[in-house]
Length: 363
Image (cartoon, rainbow, N blue to C red):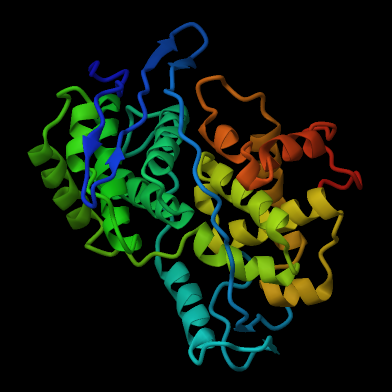
């Protein structure tokens, strides 16, 4: 591994894991060079071919949800929805759905945003360093067939450690990212694969299993062993219910939600707001669906309450993709995901980055 300015993962032999299956971390070589003239980060990545994954059905339960009173803008009206607010009952299939939903919103309010660490506590990092790391975590999750919820949690843990932990050199991001993802896997996955040995072998001696385990412990101490943090994907399926989403819309929203993980500036917003904006944008692009009052009530956010987030998401999706940062696009171009990556770029490609179809800056 090159010091400070780069990190790399080279392809290695397949390592047997528990259950007799074989998994291999994707071979990736990532070289970064900071151009002192224009401060532009140039990245070259050579990913190894990925195996196809079998399609998995993604669903969500019908729930009992509560919504805020007159204002749905979380930024202008902070707090938690309670029984005094307007309620919408949607064929509850679980006794504790309302309590779970309100607890997630309460937890979200209690967690301090990690935004702002770049340039302050992490003076050696740039947003592009983080973007490269998240792109690598996407490939990490794909290789081990992890849930998108696990990916979101891994990125959340990474941001919290970078915000609250000691300064990190760019050359140490690979080890830190690996440890954060392994913590997320152990918390989120019902059958977590044994990945430590494979990760170390793929890193070609850059770190040992003992270092990974120690870094996991350091990560857990930094986040105070609190892994029960709501992320964008925690709220996503509830918001999909608001638009009566079909399978294609689910995949489109999932693609946009995963893309949101790459954008550092979105860390200043609540995950539930990002989720609502994600579904609103996906429904508008794919079906031309407007954000009705009933959708606002179910989603918990008004159209105006998420317009700034939608602008950031559009800029992210409209930006010319770097050849080195294509993990998500490659994943969601597959038939099992309805090729929503290509479909989204066809839908959004004709839209000017600063203007939307209605010319008002909102969908």
